[in-house]
Amino acid sequence: NAGVTQTPKFRVLKTGQSMTLLCAQDMNHEYMYWYRQDPGMGLRLIHYSVGEGTTAKGEVPDGYNVSRLKKQNFLLGLESAAPSQTSVYFCASRRLAGLKNTGELFFGEGSRLTVL
Amino acid sequence: EDQVTQSPEALRLQEGESSSLNCSYTVSGLRGLFWYRQDPGKGPEFLFTLYSAGEEKEKERLKATLTKKESFLHITAPKPEDSATYLCAVQAPGSGGSNYKLTFGKGTLLTVNP
Image (cartoon, rainbow over all chains, first blue to last red; front, top):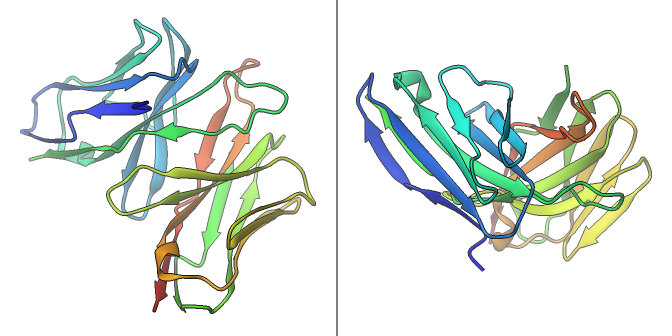
């Protein structure tokens, strides 16, 4: 059981370049999330999705776009990368909320992005 | 705005020296408070969920407690393998019935020396 898989794990971009981070989960979870983690800032929510075909903005959405065309995949795009987007990006998923739902987020291993 | 503050930022313990990590929060309509462990270069790993004041959860040397304003992660007789960053997060309802989001604190870096 792979859980949550992120690709690529490392990437170096030049300012203005574009790229897409792919997140895939094999747990049939409804909810998926993209976070970024920076030193001294903690985990901040970029975008999230509560189901296939739906996305919503999180705390820091500017400069990013997302798509959830298939339930198991959640893509994070950077159209024109900036040095401020240098960070470690984490994808996470969780199952549909229920009365006794522990709310457990399953995280990927992270994608380390450097923008020069 | 939901806020989560963790203290201390870093904690260094000797093996066997018990201590506690703090997570204070301000949120409207708390749906759950979560503790995660994060090892260097890895994604956070779920530890506990607490739903209401007075609730306690235990796992090996860790015990999490919750009041109306804060949560504590108690570490009893820690071992070097307990060294990690411990993250606290709160869940509150967003717009719409199912748009639950987690707000994370900045974490406490715990180092346990042998």
